[in-house]
Image (cartoon, rainbow, N blue to C red; front, side, top):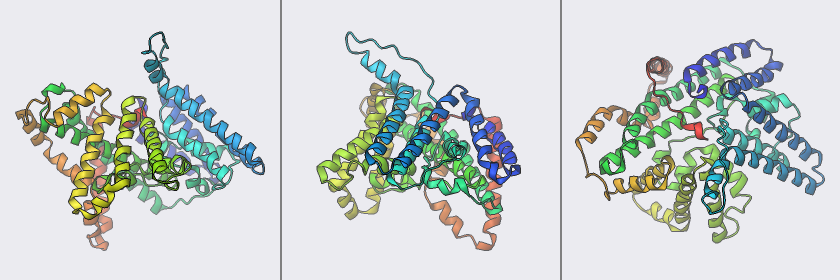
Length: 465
């Protein structure tokens, strides 16, 4: 698949950048819009029509809401209709087969799954486009009457398929006027290469360790083996997700855009609440602003706040994929967040710092079992192995072999998911810091390129979103 091919992305980027920078300023949004559509259509041409429909319905809704702003009832009806259409599209393409299969288990009910290919990035661009008419209705952003500019926002290929979720009001001014400087471009290149290194040098390599353990029958997993496997996945998913976000932010800078940050060292958190302020920040912010706060947030008493948290996290879990385990994963986090609201945060504040770190890390790592495995029997079997019930002992020779083989990458990944590297870099004398950065970026580019040329293992974890 073209979307999982980083070499293709790199080549396409070079071509688009060259065309973009020789294009006059006033035509650059059109250049981006067409380049974005070509990029998306290269993988799945038929779904260009779906994306264009999504662009049109949200573009027109924004204009209608602004036009009838004086008539709040009518403007609200346009907003509700737009929201329903967006959600129906997402539900149909992403969740129809899940609901069909579930309902067909009821005696007398038979609904044939459609077997539709999931449109790449539909969860991301649906949320992005939905935010626009909502913000127009709220008056927090002005209406965009230039169709090409709005289309460029929706289809921006740097973050179209892997986030972060960029809301229209975040880049509204940049669509009309943005700066293009050598410093900004160089910063974008550096950030892109950092993300590329995270993805291909750390995530891909450590992902092979997870694949080894996830392929084993649960009754053959030892306690150490099960924990090693899910710890490997915990590091893989962080460096994969944050790596793609870094690449998107870097690509955005090359085109003059500043996208919001999406990850902030989540594994150093001291609570689940803090973890979700640091993990996939743009998604958490979206649900906070467009679901949690409109439901009442924490303004209507604790019972209503608990209800709001359950709703938000059920939706957050379900957003990630068409599987009931994702819903359970969201509710799993809702339980811990509710407990922290009720009493746990106060207790953690009084406890030694390492207690909070260990607690948050264990919750996150255990949560990835629910996130990654497809069925509840698989989930329960893996948990059983992790906690010694039904496992093949505590430690095996194979575990020692895998730990020895992956010791270096595990150590580097553990260090890289903390601010330690950035802190050490800031201690370098300012006069030589730039040279050190150039050397590190160049080394990362050479190693990443060598890996991409030689390796065949390059999973795309964002595919199902």
